[in-house]
Image 1: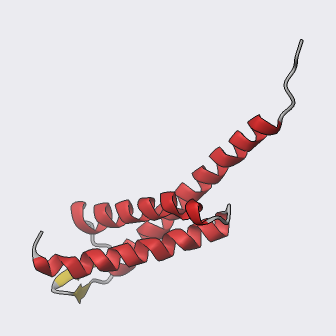
Image 2 (image 1 turned 90 degrees about the horizontal axis):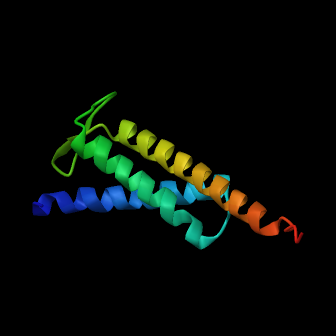
Length: 106
């Protein structure tokens, strides 16, 4: 990775953490550990849409020497984080319902 790409990596990391925190706060549960999965989903979306796919929908800007469609990238990250937070919430609710349900003992 060229040295000029590190600011973009740091920007993507900061955006991912902020979007992950926002998605976890909106959907819940509001625990510090709940931001991990939405943050990772946001970062993967930024990486794939912003780097691997080559999609450029909407306006592009030049940041740190790279041409990026930052609005599209942030929207994709927010959507991915929100979906991940919703799935995480469904799994946690289902797991809680399974442990809270009374068991039949014969």
